[in-house]
Amino acid sequence: MTGTTGGTHLSSVQTQALRQELEEQLAWRSRQLLSLQAASRDARGADDTWQELLVSITAADRALAELQQALDRLDEGAYGRCGQCDAGIPFERLKIRPLARYCIDCQRLHEAA
Image (cartoon, rainbow, N blue to C red; front, side):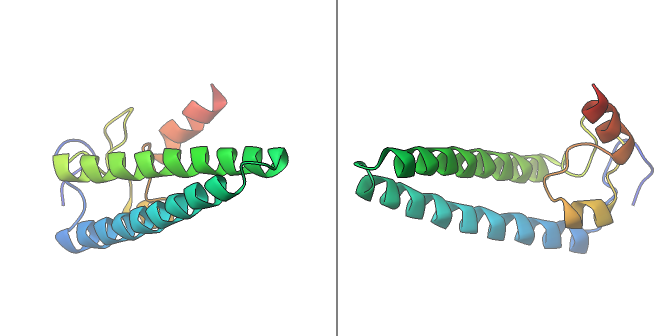
């Protein structure tokens, strides 16, 4: 592992565990999206149901995009690095929030803005 900037700070075992988690979430979200899309075809007549399904489909689609972006960053070697300061995001944080794009300090600054 290297310091806080540049290079990788995650071991290959940690990287593989995170990749597996992201891929499992991606598969689950894909199944969820397909299910919601099927339900939306059946609910065309009920306005309330249709609107709820549309919101759910939009959220699932957004989650799929975020998961794919995380996998892309993993492939590029940028996963686990803060998008603001380039510090390594601790494995413990990534286990809890695999889509984390910022270290804790930069996340706080981002939320305060």
